[in-house]
Image (cartoon, rainbow, N blue to C red; front, side, top):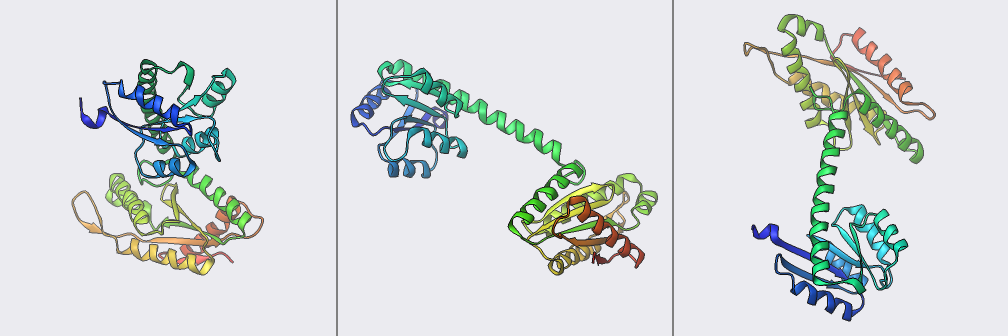
Length: 308
């Protein structure tokens, strides 16, 4: 068996030295896995152990000083640090149910603890934890598929609108600036007609890549539909939003596109920029940006206009 797979780092949290010694004795009887035991009886010791890195299983006594075992359980589950098995001196069905409801993998009454019971619990905890992690990874992949535009790799229409709604609520609550750029690829129909739809798809994919590469970490880009894109700019007032939009515009203008024959051509983009005003929703903000975008198209394209 692979050493990394067989080795288990066990954190036992119990303020009773006698109980920790009993736990240590039982672990020494388990020969099927190599075990590294970490003992912690006080809050600072537990926190230090959790902060140091990998822990494979946490055995947590419900009765802990300063911070209860249930509080530790809540914190460890929230951070997804490791599977937690709760320990209690006497055993209570009510406490067991509560522990499991709050995310514990298992529950053991100390009075029923044996080396065999401990080995079984450890085996179950590791397998169950792997299942949970895999399920979470699968769920994240499904969420990604549901929210990502497959062509550009950016957020799709539904996802970018949700992000915009969240950003507006945040800006409203904390009285922060928020701006938006609505961007449209100029003469995109001509690209499809002249070079073909496959090349048109390549252009959209390249635009998505350039947006991800050139926007700030806090900015959020999505494909609004067809050749239109939305860029959400949190904590950004209008003049700064125009600066971001200008950087995007020049980047797209300088990006080299290729057709199926390898010939180089270029595209440009027009943008309409609006900033959040008190009381409006995402549709109002987009509508004002759309009016500004229309103005940019009328005034010659490959330019930025703002909403008054």
